[in-house]
Image (cartoon, rainbow, N blue to C red; front, side, top):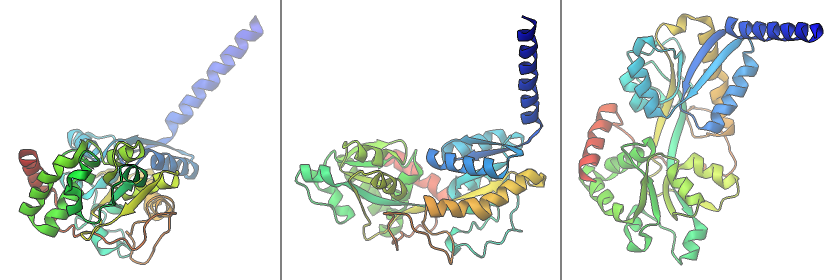
Length: 326
């Protein structure tokens, strides 16, 4: 009995020491809006590279990410904000540290934030993804342009993310506003609504519906469509004349946190190493001037939409109009 008691006391002491060891590690908190499979990849690499740091990654969608940081303000526990959409980031610049000492000359010109407070992480582009099997079963042709999607034969077979809740949905709206003019673009979406099966709440919704066979055509994320193709799903990726709508996401340090060596080291590793690994593995779309990456079945030489004037103020204005008119 005494031996058992002794072993229990030793075990309790070991658990306490392990807890103290964890608590004694410097903690770096990252708010992150990447997909789950990418978060897991980042977490594994960071833990391997920084075994002496306690790195906590808190996932949340980009909109929630921005709202949380705004609410927390200077009292936030966040050290690094990772994968924040540039439009949402405009509301957070007062919380972000100055990064003007970082060299941005290696990045594509349109990927560089003029604020000097974010570094590029990904270019996230959209496409027209189709479930070829569903189209064949219904005896329907592939669409060749946005106007084709208005054909009543596609009624209930098209999925699009709601621009008011999804950055992906908003990029499609903004790209057509830039390509056609605001009035024509809004008139188009009013007509397209008749053929939409569902405006999904998130950008992943259209591809999810394609995978389930619930839709035949999706205004979708290119990266997600590629992931499902590589998983064996019979999808095809199309780009219409107006090109692939896209947005840039970046990373930042919270003001004051850049003075902590552990935060700066983790941030530098993300910028110098992990972002590039992410391009090699998941998101090859271009953010560097002189580097290109290949991912199986990912489209090459993607024609991108005109996404100029994609500011936070413009987004708020267009979404208010969407709310009132669509």
